[in-house]
Length: 119
Image (cartoon, rainbow, N blue to C red):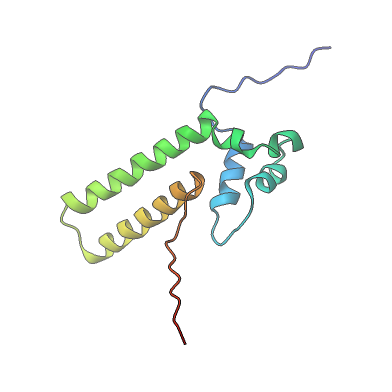
C-alpha cells in the first residue's frame, strides 16, 4: 500500500517551519537553528544542515513579507500625521521586525562596542 505524500506548495512554510521560526524569534529565546528544527520534528540529517532550511524558498518568502511590512510601517511614520502613541507603536514594531530580519539573515541584532580604558 502506497503512502500518500502531501505536496507542499513551493515557497510556503510548513507548520514545522513556522514553529522553527517562532522558536528562533520568540521573546528572550536563544536557541540554535538545528535545535529548533529537531524540537519541531525535522530529521536529524536535515537539522544538521540548518543552512538548507534558512535558504529555503519558504523562509525567503517569509523574510520578503517581513521586509515589505517593515517598509509599510516606515512609510506610515513619514507620511501620516500621527499622535505620540501611534508613533511609539510603529517605532516599536519597526524595531522588532528589523531585529527579526537581522536574526534570520544571520546578522548582528545589536551593535556592541568595547572600550578599553587604561587604568
